[in-house]
Image (cartoon, rainbow, N blue to C red; front, side, top):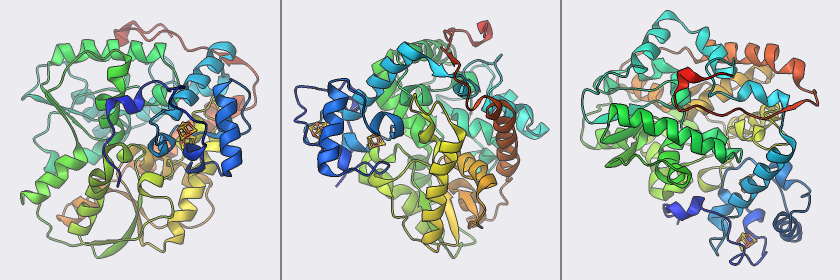
Length: 417
Ligand code: SF4
Ligand code: SF4
């Protein structure tokens, strides 16, 4: 039984609690360790020796934290070591294209955003408004829904007041790559923005953002207090339960699920929700080998270590493993409930030579089940992400040059990158 985590889950590593038993690392869904190897890697991590695979291959999914019976927070120690490594060596220059908080510096998201359709750009313009909110709730799209804004074009979301822009990113990737000082700069920017719009409640259109706002950013200086932070998955399920979403065309398909990295932090009850929704709209579910708390990140996590520095080939290989697993289930479709996973799957598919089942966001499946036709532009976005990476990262993939990321100013317009 997985229970929701508390704030402490994202706190510092507790060396006094750790018995170097290795239990955390033998449950790692990414790196295969024997118990002896796991103990040895933990020992090395603690005494700051070079690890064999851990610091190179970890995807900062935090599964190891869940399995530590002593609540010693081993994943936080991995992030700490990455931070020390980054401060000493900087990041390989290929990582620069994945730094997204600087509007003046082209990156994989801004490249795709520039090439969006007129309809998508219109939505982003509306979402960036600083006009007073219509109600007491700010609906936060997060970077990933900003890149797939037509996901919100359903009658289900018609009354939501969506606000956000890439520069008001929650800092999830900075957190998962171990940057600390920079995350404090992100929260200053967010605090200023929230204090302008003054929402009482936050509805987040992804599970990752929900967890970052609830459990992570309070450790990094976010002071703005919400009465309530809700994930759109909880919100949608409530609408089904109240009879406000009515299925008119049950889907009659078998789907497998790419889990969001952060669902496990909200426990079994939360992980059941996308499954409840899928069953309600007529789907049968076949689980991938790595699912629920033992899930594997969609692939982007393979870019987070300092050694990887967002190496796109490594990221692609990680996604391919998941695509293979999804295919092996025999499901007729793959369902994701994070738009980041959606983009990651579609982008990596460009270099995946086998045929895959169709990939849908859960919102798109709901739309089909209520008789709507989703506006599917993710293929277009992924195409642009792919070519952006080809043009801007690939020429520097093997460059030994390194860089450090500049300060993130409180006001995005002051960006001097
Ligand atoms: S962090 Fe926890 S599970 Fe891992 S070695 Fe230490 S005590 Fe054991
Ligand atoms: S954070 Fe995830 S990938 Fe990294 S060691 Fe822990 S379980 Fe493995």
